Image (cartoon, rainbow, N blue to C red; front, side):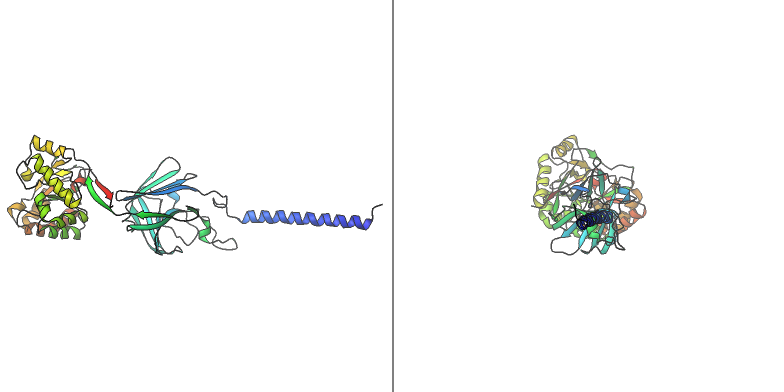
Length: 411
């Protein structure tokens, strides 16, 4: 016969075990309920891959995701301290520095033409913020590629620690469920930041050197190229000063013998973002192929830039000259606006000729060498102001013709 007191004790123990098991399940259910429903909690990082590539003077940022990204719902200039913004950003931290440059995708307008750039403290406090030009593309459904100039983003050359940050915008910031913003972020690389060495680059050449003969660019847009012949000379620094003051880039068709005589001026032309073209070695009428090659070699040896544009002395052309230019990888460039500044007509006349004769796509002929050029220098500021007031954008010849400059990292 079973003792009744023993049976009652066993029943009580079973009841207590059942209560403990129920409490355990309730606790687990409560914990599941409290975990925010984002990718991190599910154990899946929405960033599958990321990379940086330097191509010429551009930096290319690539990010692969595990799901489609709605770019219009991303905030390209978010509040990094509060947790209610959705963003996807490249974070660049200069080695040894405390400022983080955050370059963010998205936005409701110009979504694929610009990036947001915020300079923040390590805790996310925004110190400055701006929008820069960029080219953003979707490659398939799950890859984004952004190309931009690192100088526009305030990234000088040097070593950086970098990673990509994704924020879902669903991070509770008040009440018992509040969590630090950093705990609501997904990173790639997940564990530690990668290192990238942003290298200096220099311009080494340009495209489009096909021997074609042109006197102007496309007439469809209000763009104009200012050009200067016969330099470099003692007037070249004065011309460069005015152009720098107005943030204008121009094209200098230089003589090989002048480049040899003023090498620092030729290098400064390129350093300030201008373009150099070949104007023969010594201004011979219809120069020979060897003369043209000699000029290109001199320019390249002094500046490490190989010209893709050739301007014939006196504007004189022939079939053999065009053929020589083509064989040397250059396009032949004349003009459609001649200031005749070589006749020394005075600054007022030079300025008036430019403003009166310019049309969309014009190439303007001036000189920074070959004689007294004070009148050209004095006319330049007024001509630039007048052209801009008329809605013109001032570009290099290569830009005008739709060609591009070629850049290489400095060894």
